[in-house]
Image 1 (cartoon, rainbow, N blue to C red):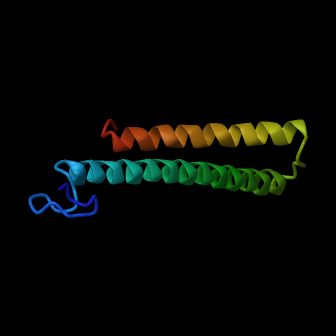
Image 2 (tube, helix red, strand yellow):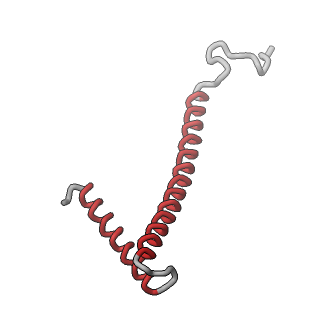
Image 3 (cartoon, one colour):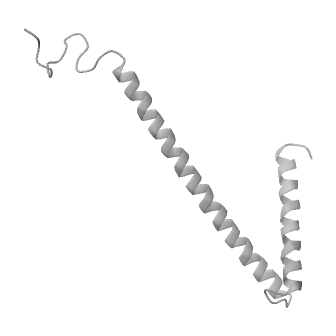
Length: 100
C-alpha cells in the first residue's frame, strides 16, 4: 500500500532534501530584488528633491541680485552657480579621496 500524499516522511519531515535551501535562496532573491527597487526609487526621489532645492537656491540668489527669471542675466547667474557647485563637488571628492 502506498502512503497518503500528505503523510510526512519520517526521515525528512514535510520537505524533500534541498527544499529548505532552495526556499532560502528564493526568499533571499526576493529580498534583494525588493531592496534594489526601493533603492532606485529612493535615489530618484533624492535627485528630484535636490533639483528642486537647487532651483530654489538659484531663484533666491539671482533674484536677490535684481535678475528676473527667464532672462539672459538670470540664466548666466544660474549657470555660474551651477559651475560653482560643480567645482565645490570636485574639491569635496578630491578631499574625500585624500588627494588634497
